[in-house]
Length: 180
Image (cartoon, rainbow, N blue to C red; front, side, top):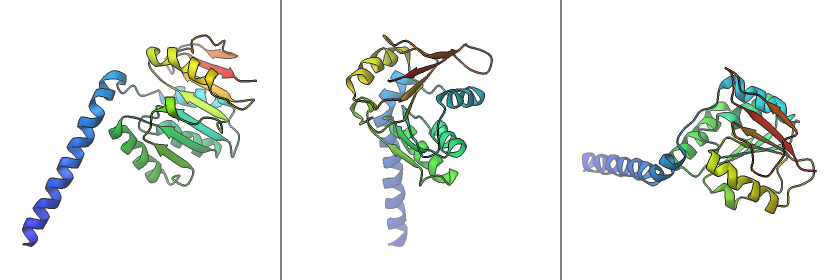
């Protein structure tokens, strides 16, 4: 009886994990995992001039590495949006393991439907196709004055960056935009 219960629990766990990856697979193919360089992340966060206590939003946060680094280095509150369920789980686990889970919130939600009104800093490391759409989202959202938007790798369509760090061995292009 106990052995049967154990087998049932393992089958349920296995099927849950399998369903998680099947659910997230189409989105993984569309976006794909592209980790940022550690030094590049540092430069991007530095460019954002994050102050302690600010709200840092990461759109498409992947495994959560940028969220964890921002909250550790700048003592800010991090909010990450990740639609690909396996990456969402990794981001949740990374936040928990970092000891910063009280400062990090990860949401399994499409960031195009996110409420960004409380953001002080918005970080994007997205595909060029998504970056074409992000400008429209940011213009339609009532962002508070002074919001800094940092885009790693690709510029935001129809927006002029205030600063730009050129591509190097350590990073891709990094763009800083400010909403006044």
